[in-house]
Image (cartoon, rainbow, N blue to C red):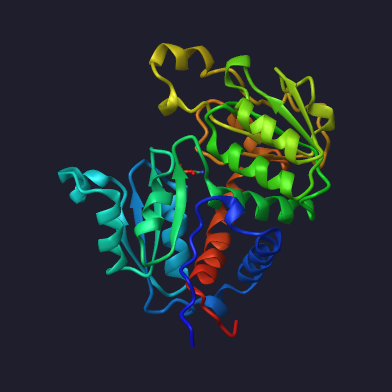
Length: 312
Ligand code: CP
C-alpha cells in the first residue's frame, strides 16, 4: 500500500469546508463520548514546540493528546532547548521528527511553522505565527459557534479590538468568508483596523460587506456574535504606542444592554482589559466554554492528521 503524504495544518485554507465540517462533527462526537477515544492514540507522541508564551494552545493540545491515550514532550520556552545554542528551525524539526509522531509549533516569526513543515517528516500544526495565522484557534471558534448558534453561516459577526495584529481575527474572518457569511462589523481604533491587504482580498474574493465602526454601541443591536480581542502588546514597536490603545475597549454590562438576548460573546483569551469581570456571569459570555471546546477540536485534528481510524 502507498504511504500517504504527510499533512500539515499551517493555514486554515489547508482544510476544505467539508473537512472543517467533518472535524466539527468529530469533535462533537468526542464531547459526547470521550471515553470511546481514550486509547485512540495509544503509543503516539505529540511534541509541543513553543517559542512564544501560551496557556490555552499548548495545554489544550497536551490535554488533547493525553485524553487520546498518547504522550507529550516539548518546551514552553525555547531557551531550555538547543535553540538557545543557535539551532535552526529546520534542524530542530528534523530531530523532533525522530522523537514524536506529530508536532505543534508557536513562533513569533510569521512563516516559521510553514518553514518547519518543509523539513518535517511528521505533521506540523501552526499554533500561532506572529501576527499572521492561528488556525487551531479558528477550529476552536468554529466549534464554539456551531455549538452555541447551531449554524455557522447565518450570523452577523463583529470583531472588536486589535484587528491589525490579532492573528485569531485574520484566520477566522477568512474562514467565515469561505463559509459564506455576508456581513462583518469591524470595531477598532483607526490605527488598528484590519490590514488593507486582507480587506482587499475579502472584498475581491467574496460577496460580503465589511462595515467599520469605532464603538461597540454603534452596532451592538444587530450583532449575533461579538468577538472581542486583546490589544497585542508584544507586536507594538514601543510601550508608548501600546499605551495609547491598551484601554480602547472595555466591554461591560452597560455596553451590551441593547444587545440581542441570544448574542454570544467570544474571546480567544487571554483577556487583559477588554471584558469586565461582571460580564462573565452573563449567559451570553461563552469565552471560557470556548477555551474548553478547544481540547475537543484539537483531539479531532490530531486524529485526522495522524490518520487514526478508530472504531469509535
Ligand atoms: N487563544 C490562545 O492562543 O491562547 P494562548 O496564547 O494562551 O495559547
